[in-house]
Length: 161
Image (tube, rainbow, N blue to C red; front, side, top):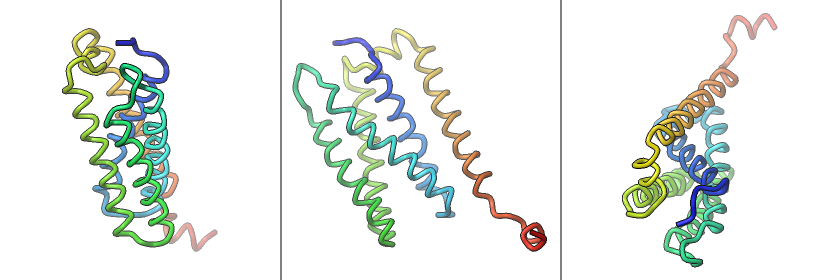
């Protein structure tokens, strides 16, 4: 098995952002500008995750995970188009389905023997913990930044201006 390289590392980081940002939008009650900003960030990470997977191959060939990546590119794009056309139920179904597909791929990546994440966990657990904490912390910072940027102005301040 080849060692970690920049493509595999950035692919794993993008997967971390997809896994962290997905529930932020799925479980938030308000579907506002913060939802939209986090959603576009999530879509960018998802596109990178899927496209980069085509250059990560074991034994020189494609696997079912590459098929999942191609299908996910389609469903994320359909979800984005559905949102722009106001078809919210279709948007929700495509995005939640894409997220669940990513969770299934992640579970496979951590449970399958010989994959890089279990090896990293057994050989360098501090590195894995640091990477996970970094992704979670920056995801939270992104959410808080978007929330403060898109906070509605108080009524009194808006009337004065």
